[in-house]
Length: 420
Image 1 (cartoon, helix red, strand yellow):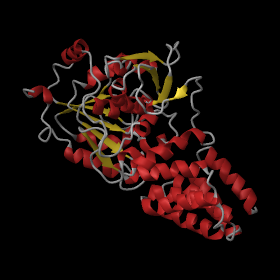
Image 2 (image 1 turned 120 degrees about the vertical axis):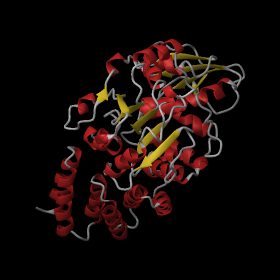
Image 3 (image 1 turned 90 degrees about the horizontal axis):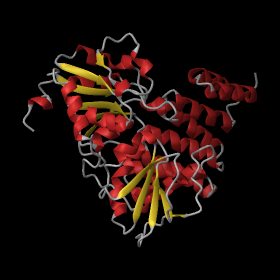
Image 4 (image 1 turned 180 degrees about the horizontal axis):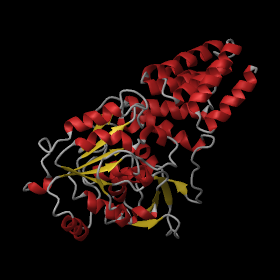
């Protein structure tokens, strides 16, 4: 089989999720045509899929050597270096790609992510705006009104609208009071499941559900554009918590329901929404939580609303699962207020616990979302959050073992036994 046929076969395998098979096919393509940059480029991307970042960097370097004037070769190498953690070299690759093609949108976006990870948020957030132009990426909302320019509202009305997942909306809600102080009226459009919770961010904002009729407004802004519009840096993130709040009666009701549980109460969320294109990096199998099953004096509570079928595995981890009683995030927030700790992958329960100022340990992928920076064990976004980072792609065992080693009732006395 010639290299072109092998490239096509590998593309089909990658598209169907057969990543290891795609790598083997592409190795045959490299053997058939070792001087063709395309096969090394494709192998670079496929090796990233299986977590072989050393191999991906090697293949990406070879593609760039063979095609030094092709911007996509530098772009692929840049992504491999970015995921490997070589941020300075990744930045050089993306800038090289942009000198070859200033309109290379994905290079603009990936350079933005690299700069955000490095802590250069002024240029990073500006380049993050390229997300709207990525082929196959998110599409901007089409309104007759102009995008807000970050200036005072002077009595006008602004629409802030959610654009991505639940966690992004929860994180972005911290900016609502800042916008409300800009001298205008604030309308916030969010997912229906978040309306009650986000309504607690500011008494001056009107929160409406996405899909319902919108009130009149003068300008608009996506929530994820606010860090750019407001000039957010590592040093000035509005991180006062809690900035979201629970209904006292609901908190009390959950407290009564848990009254007999004198153990350390720990919430667990091991998977995010499968619609997220990077979900394979962050979500884990419930079987990976097996080391937690041997711990004594702890009651685990499921916060897993998505892919709850993952619970039917061979693990003997015992979970209290009341998620069928959680109608929206306000319900979940009241439950979380009665927990001593939340352990979650990079998903909405982690953001929720952080926004409520609850103790939260987030299990963080080797190639993290750029907002978490690269090496910190804490985060500027949530003062009560700790990050437990992967040391290698796709390997969660050491992360969970570190969590198990630190998760002891002696180390974290149950909150309901304290006078606070």
